[in-house]
Image (cartoon, each protein chain N blue to C red):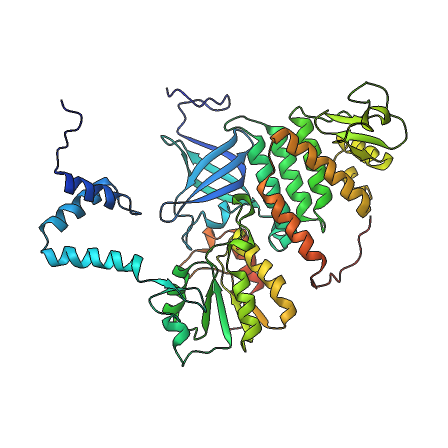
Length: 278
Length: 203
């Protein structure tokens, strides 16, 4: 039996195993192979080789493209596992057709990649990620979905922000403008937040939304209406929190910001479909 | 045993080591190539060495299309018979070759030298997109063909360029996405198949 990687779901002797996974990263590898990072349902993050995936006639090809949810069969390799079969379950076509949604997808996969360790099974996280992608594929605006995902991700990994009481003095938060501080781990009451220069103001509505999102599913989260002011507020809060936990800024954020900034003063094709029903 | 002892003479092991760094050349192939060169006539070895050195020393980027060339402008940009109203945008210089092989495209090219990949920190500024915009502003170009690779990064790059240049009023097209010739429906992925269905043609 091989020492090293351990995963409780699979006997170490099994040479081939099956799972479903989402492709979160890919590199060129050799002539036509790809080195993929998968987030799988049963084994967590796994790195594997897709042989010949760059050739046009490869049977893996589109089934192992970034942000594809696929049924996979893998063979244990000496260092890296090898993908022997792949069948896409969901390719999230609408995400691929929109620059904005695709950027959200890039960001999501970078988040998942940075927050996870290899071979640590996390079914709950897999489901959250998968549902987020499904939601994104049906959305017109990805921002809110990203925020919900960030909050749930942090909370799932043990970084749930304190939103009921002041994270400094423990006092119950009042129905007024409070503060939020990522280093303090959540909301701050007026007295504690005001002198804290790094704390952001936290409006009553933003607090309500965050509290709701912590306990609701996508169906409910989707119904929350956010104006641009509230969107920006929650975005800053969540970004602070993610950055504080990771101790770095994710690379895809810069791209998303650039796109958003340019999108505002570029004549983009007008969306002629019906306005949202929310 | 002396740890510095090498079973082969130093020049040979150095050659093997260098060849081994090439893509697709493993240690055994490197050995075979090295011994082959050893036995080949001296001019053959010199020709090869010259060819390698001149690739590094005599090549430059074409100031128009940014393709790698031995002259500026490159052979394609200098060719008077080519259609100057069409520009095909590709990711890498190597992508020009397969397109030229088709003999179906007679316009000019524009090489981006990369593809947008936010996860790896590759941003539009790292590519030659600005040069494309300048080119479109100063020349009578009426069609831009986006021929980035049909994957997520390629699509993102194409969509980004499309957004940038659409205000200029040029016709923007992209390569059709569908089934490869000699392929098999059974193994086609869903994205390709749905694109192929959308782009089906009258017979």
